[in-house]
Length: 386
Image (cartoon, rainbow, N blue to C red; front, side, top):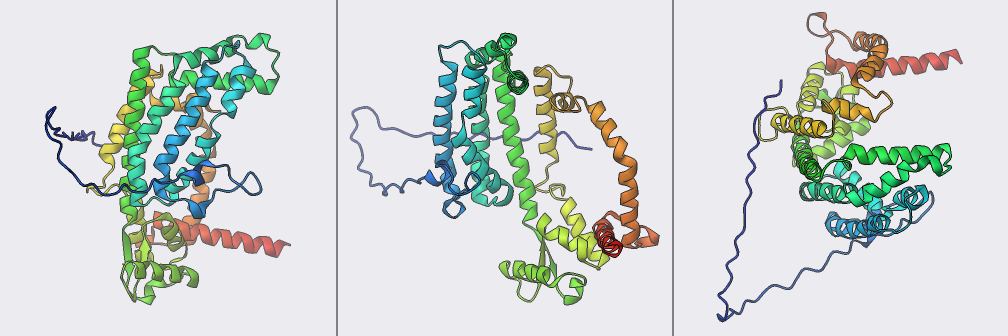
């Protein structure tokens, strides 16, 4: 059970002392300004087949802040042109240009998503901490704008007279609904509160990721080749390389990331070591230390609940499911329970294949081995049946 503890937020203010009016200005020698970072590789259209490929070889984390600034300026200009147009609001004058806007920001965000998910260095984490709430505030500025919403609503209200086909009508209705769900139909005060909650959530999500990533920077050291039993040679080599990167010559390191943990759990025959690796992985952010996420999770739940109520929903679950095929948490649960018996049977089979543990029990850290054996048996059976 999550303990709802308050996070202490300390804001520091830098006070700069200025000389009195008319006083002699001291001669201060300043270092030459650092060369400006050119974000062009993130902003320019991608080249190559299939719509192009990001120029990964040219991208540096320091490019993202100026790229965000430039993309925000471009997108703001595009959205304001739609908002301020003098034409009658319709599918063609509102929805189509909304769909076509934002190509530059989409390119930047696509690459940024890869960095935050797979290349989240300390530098990337610092940028994410600063820019997540900024970007959230920016999108709210644009898409909670009452003038823009009036244009969208005008197109929506006149939909019956526009002779739209099924696809156009669907896109128009979905666009209008997305604006309403975001809070565009609320009062000025309510929209301001939604923006505040969204920025607070963005900050908490960034903090949550930072803490989990910190735990993923830990590792378990293997001291002997006996502990490598069952592992493919290529994976052994990667564990050795990981140890050498951490100044552990002659050893092997299982880093606490999915790319390292998953193949270890799938192939290792050392059951006790599998359990140790598994527990380290599932315990990320739950160790009662500086990287513990329980208070962050509690704050996220509280903020989500406040936002859901403000948007007209009883709770976040109802808000989250409202715009899905299931529509309600009850329907989603019904769907999950319909596949639950088959899932349990599959899980039981994997545990049987994994072999017994203490007192004949099969544990969760045995499951990956069991599933691997099941897949191998299935593949062999398929080959034999041909």
